[in-house]
Image 1 (cartoon, helix red, strand yellow):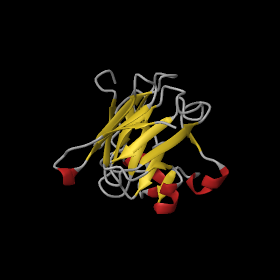
Image 2 (cartoon, rainbow, N blue to C red; image 1 turned 60 degrees about the vertical axis):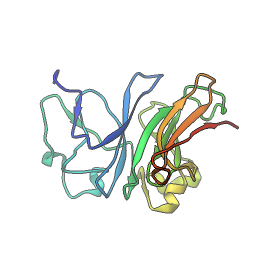
Image 3 (cartoon, rainbow, N blue to C red; image 1 turned 90 degrees about the vertical axis):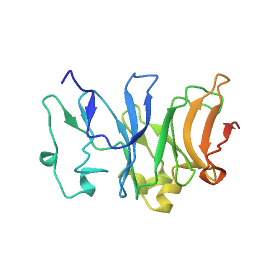
Image 4 (spheres, rainbow, N blue to C red; image 1 turned 120 degrees about the horizontal axis):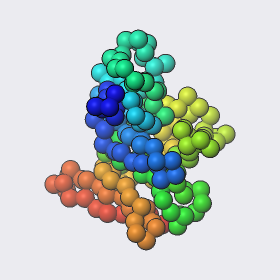
Length: 190
């Protein structure tokens, strides 16, 4: 197991370390059916090429996956169906936008230009959804209604990068193909 950290990862655009636990998280683009947000601990098997999204949404079992000694498969912490091109993941390491956002997760996408927000659970291993977000209890955004429940901002050109700035505000970098690749930097404040 010492020769790899994780495998079975498909097209990971975003990597971030939780500043409170030191655990690595990633975002993965699916081929067409699912994108994922994963908790990537040492020995992580994300399941690609056999599956994207949670096992419950696929017609295979863990036994169908490539398995190396010391590895473990974990369902995604959250999935988007169909795939929408998730990009960066950022743990917002600031209270400038309010305590609700501090040390919680922002994720962007390239295809819709949406900014998603997720609150972590107490163990920081998954997300918490409110009473108005009951459709997300399966940790899969199936369609526009469920997607809107985690969307904090929309209308950006494709989001490629999200960072906590030195001033404590959230910054978003976009890529606009129609503008010959020119993008913009947005500062998110309240």
